[in-house]
Structures are given as C-alpha cells and as structure tokens.
Image (cartoon, rainbow, N blue to C red; front, side):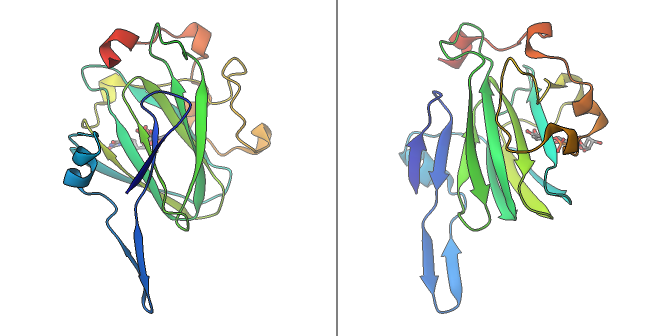
Length: 189
Ligand SMILES: Cc1cn([C@H]2C[C@H](O)[C@@H](COP(=O)(O)OP(=O)(O)O[C@H]3O[C@@H](C)C(=O)[C@@H](O)[C@H]3O)O2)c(=O)[nH]c1=O
C-alpha cells in the first residue's frame, strides 16, 4: 500500500497494490493492520455506495458535525470522479483551501478525507459508482452542506457549472462565509 500526503495535512492518497495475472488482478482494497502499520488507525463503522447516472453529477460539499464527525476513505469501482476535500478546521493555516484527486475504477486510488473537511466529488463518466468507509454512522441531524460552487473556495471542477446535476440540498447549500464551521484545528491535532 502506497500512502502519499497531499498539500493539506491529514488528507492522503492511498494506492493499494494490484497483483496482476492472466485472469486479471487482485487487490486488498482495505486492511486494518496494513494501515495501522503505516500510522492510519481508523475505526470504520459504515460503508456507503452511490451510483451517479450522469457524468457531471456533483455530490457535495458535505460534512457531519460533531459528535458524529466522519473520516472517509473513498474509492471508485465503476467510472471516475474528481474527489475534493476542503479544509474547514477553524484556525488551520490552510483553512478554506482544497485538494482534488482523480479516483477511477482503472487507477484504484483512494482518498482519505479526515474529520474537519468538507467533501464532494464530480463524476467524470456515466454510471460511476463510489464506495467509501466512514468512521461514524449517518446522523441526519448532524448532516450539512456548503455550496460546491462557492467562488471563495474556488474549486476547479472541470465542468460547466450550468450543466451540473445536483440534489436539492446541494443546490440550496450556504456559502462558506455564511456558515460557521463546527471543526477546530486544535481538535484535529
Ligand atoms: C449519506 C447517507 C444518506 N442516506 C440517505 C439520506 C437520503 O434520503 C439519501 C441520499 O442522501 P444524500 O443526498 O445526502 O446522498 P449524497 O449526496 O450521496 O451524500 C454523500 O455525499 C458524499 C459527497 C459524502 O461525502 C457523503 O458523506 C454523503 O454526504 O440517502 C442514508 O440513509 N445514509 C447515509 O449515510
């Protein structure tokens, strides 16, 4: 398992090894001990799976506030996404900054998004399926969203914003400046 840092502390790109042979390949997509040995001790309690029919579907930017904050480990099993994490840890030297990583069924990469980040993705192929592990259960009362297209955040999604396929919740999400982050940098240390 190769684990690479990104420009934002805590956000990591994981690339599991693939064992190829005449049949295809085999990979350990998640192994608690392997990650523990490399310093990532995460207690996952829920797995999610979403299908987005159209390319250009945007889901995000989402979070769950404490006491149900979630770290997420994402991968793609069909199609491709640009996966995005935005640092919203109050007091963080990189508050408001984002990183993006292309995850696809082909490249097998995974993105680790810790607590204290907004998370979202845009699909880059039809019928894209994303699966991810979460460190806390779904808690609708703690669920929230920030506008995916907030110019203050300035994410380059690589699509025409007018054509994005969105949920009603995501279309109505507030901008970063109109929102109070429930995450503190100190809590993340
Ligand atoms: C996230 C979630 C949703 N649901 C339900 C609520 C709702 O009726 C339906 C669809 O929910 P949403 O519209 O919130 O689904 P979606 O927009 O795919 O939400 C997800 O987006 C990505 C970017 C994330 O980071 C995830 O944590 C999650 O927020 O599924 C659950 O039952 N459990 C869950 O864990």
